[in-house]
Image 1 (spheres, helix red, strand yellow):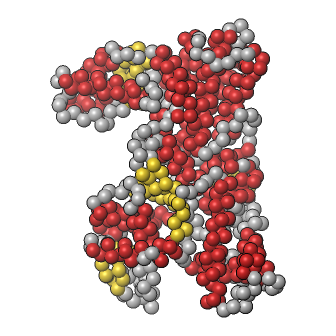
Image 2 (image 1 turned 30 degrees about the vertical axis):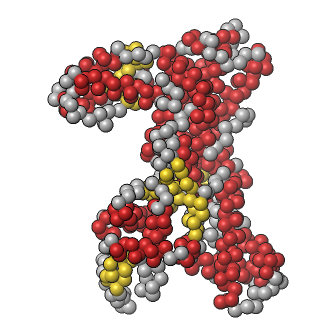
Image 3 (image 1 turned 90 degrees about the horizontal axis):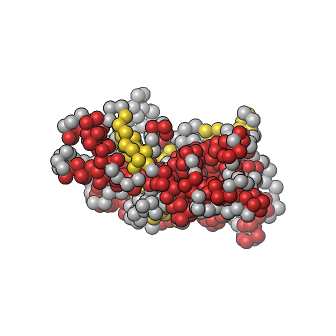
Length: 583
């Protein structure tokens, strides 16, 4: 019943079968829609194992009272295999209690499916492009990039686990003026490596020490060929070389965080391939771009030097934006929006869905780029769902005080700095302990505390505790996990199984909502339940996992613990966090 299908999906099928029978009997009208019917864990576990709103949402279509319809639905549900009782609550909710054997079957399904428990076919191979990080290639990865990097990577992993075909993409912004600044900064360090006294780094150039090895590498590779050359000679060379070396640095920083992209797309290459020109031509052909004049700035008198200039404008107002947007500047250069529009057009050609992970400071551009993708979808007759996830910055603290800046970068804390101090797993899990749109503090002292208030420690401790118990049982008594006495497991153990059995449902819900932090929240709840069960043995010796007087029950509890450990590992793997064996 449960193989690759969640227990909730299985009993949702049971509810659907009962409703179909009522449809056939004429209790429900022939055109009744079941799409809003849900089956979920009740808010209060004492009310039962599962609850459905079927009577509440279908009563109006059936032209009857919800409780009357609930009585008819509940009567049929109680006759179904695996359902011990179906009780009506409040205005018409139906609470289901399942036979304990159902939960014991699910426990064995966890063991049988192992690493695949929770994996879903929901995505049906849909091609999803997740673009995240996409930092300017002008320096090492810093804390401004970290949270979005983790959210994007965990989301990509979650979508894969839920059955999507995912491409992880990094868009290299290597066509703007900041790359010229990088090239000039690298040339300065190149001259320094050749023996020049460069003095203080001039205002406007990048001061970080991370460019010293770049300059040394360029000096070793190029000699003094460009030491005294005119800027127009060396600038193109140093642009390309500096970007290449910065991307190597960035990839190394991301690898420390456990992040590896499938595709790196270059903005400069986009322009060389004339993709913005192609996009403009296509959009003009479909009347999404026209030549027009922007309105004067609103709310105040325009600057004295302001003048109306005709520009190619994208009809973003057609898609809910407050004004049409220029795709080119008055000098003929592409605006960032124009290039970004072409980039998304390129991505949409090979993906069914697009997801971008952006910093919250980009909130003002969400509407227009969504309008652009909507236009491309409408014109091509292919609907390409597009979602932008905004991620708030993280405030770094140490014992409640702001953290000092990094020596390596000159003016910011790098990801490498963080990982060196607290480790990859702490960084990744902590970044997922709050919704990405919520403000967050990362306190170096608190994230390594061995306490329940530290989610990453608490979840990893739960897993390590299980592994320690399994080792101890084997070494001291030769007892291994077994299913032979599962029917001896009581209500506390069943409650723990119920929590574990929610994992597949949580995966699908998190994937649908594009919210990987839900998995972190769930793992913390599972760890809390497991540790609470362990604590029972402190006051009641009969509740311990290892019982000298009853090896059969011990083996069954060990089987339960082993299954909980499997679910913890599967969830942590989705988040890109190691499930430690010892602590």
